Every structure is written in C-alpha cells, then in structure tokens.
Image 1 (cartoon, rainbow, N blue to C red):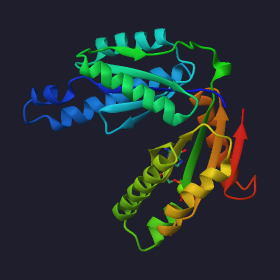
Image 2 (image 1 turned 45 degrees about the vertical axis):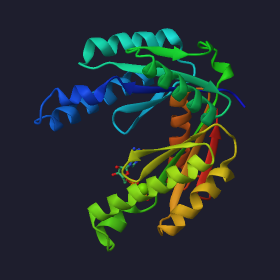
Image 3 (image 1 turned 120 degrees about the horizontal axis):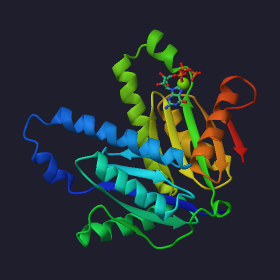
Length: 253
Ligand SMILES: Nc1nc2c(ncn2[C@@H]2O[C@H](COP(=O)(O)OP(=O)(O)OP(=O)(O)O)[C@@H](O)[C@H]2O)c(=O)[nH]1
Ligand SMILES: [Mg+2]
C-alpha cells in the first residue's frame, strides 16, 4: 500500500498574540495568514510536498519523503521571517487517517508540554521515497461558469454552494477516513492512499447529486504529494478535453 506522511502545523499561541495587536488588527492577521500560507506552500512544494490551509491558523502538509532535517530548516526559516512561530507533528501511517491521527497526537503533546517552535515525530523514514505513496483526487464542477453567468444563481450564491459542497465532502470523506480540501473556484481535493477510483466515485456521488451538480474527477497516485497532484490534474484535464471517456480517470506513477 505504501506509507503516507502528514505534517500537521499550528501557529504557536496565536490567540493571545492576535490580541496584542489591538482592535485594528484584522487586516494585519489576514495579510499574515496569507503570507504564512505562501511561504509554507513554496517551501514544501520545493521538496516534493504540498500543503493546505485549515482554518487559516493550521496547515496540513502532505509531506511524503520530506525528512526531519528539512522540517527543522523550515522551522528556522519560519522563525526568521514571521513574528509568530509554528510547531509541527509529523505522522506516518499506512492510511491517510493513521498518519493524520499520529501527527495530531504528537502536535497536541507538544502544545500540552508547553513546547514551542518544535517538531515531534515518532519514526524516521527519511527520504526513502519508495516506501511512500499517496492518492489525490482533483474534483472540478462541470460548466460552473455558464451556471453562474447564464443560470439563475448569483456569483455569491454559487460560491456559497461550493462551500456547501465542500462541507458535504468533508463529512463524507471523514466517514471513510479520508481528508478533503477546498482548492478554490469549483475545485476540491480528496486525499487518500488507495487505488480504487470507484471508492471515490461512490463517496462523492450523493452530495454532488443532492446539490444538482455534475463533476469530473482526476485521480493521481505517486510517491510524493506534488507528483500525485500533477497526475491528478493531468487526469482531470484529459477528461475535460475529451481525451478519455467518462467523468473519472485514474493515473498511477
Ligand atoms: N485551484 C484550482 N482552481 C481551478 C483550477 N481550474 C479552474 N479553477 C477554478 O475554477 C473556476 C472555474 O473554472 P472552470 O472549472 O474552468 O470553469 P467551468 O465553467 O466549470 O468549466 P469546465 O470545468 O471546463 O466545465 C476558475 O475560476 C478557478 O477559480 C485548478 O486546476 N485548480
Ligand atoms: Mg469547472
């Protein structure tokens, strides 16, 4: 099956720090959160990973093959750049869920122990990439531009529907021990590490139908998250361009 590695990152003591900025702070926090996301995405994609913002003060890195030394260098660079620090729990498991669970437990212990700008990991698989695999499903709603420009819905209303779909996807994927993320526009991502495209199809069918949408889904499986994402998007583009039949396509490295 292959191992999945997840790096759960959380800004240290962010609540109290935000208060220290006074009431004219919201725009400052928005800018800081965007910069932090930009920095983490740049750093982690450079080493084959990928990261998504979760509630803006937590970040979930898909870090197959990114070793502890690279995480340490990330913390150091982070501390030099930003007025806040982050801590990281690195979890490794044979499913996405196991990796996430371990990462969360390690991060929670760091916080409880009062450690800041710290990393916790149980195992050291380093960069033995052949031991890892991750599967990413890139989902896109068909004809959303036409729906919003010519259909009955408003731009804002359609955007709200995308958030509704996201929330339903989170609910369904959590039931199946997978993760999902909102990529923007009408695009979503499901993270797992199986080989079964039908599993994803069954899982997304219900919420998509109930919202009256039709979707396409490109799935990519590879040792690193960045590579799996590239394959997933390639598969999605092949469906959109009519190069393959059906609305779901799977590519493996
Ligand atoms: N994050 C991300 N967003 C995308 C991507 N492609 C498109 N989008 C977003 O999705 C929005 C809608 O674009 P499309 O999906 O091309 O528009 P559409 O009318 O639905 O067209 P089809 O999907 O081809 O039917 C864009 O405005 C972007 O915000 C992608 O690869 N990644
Ligand atoms: Mg679309």
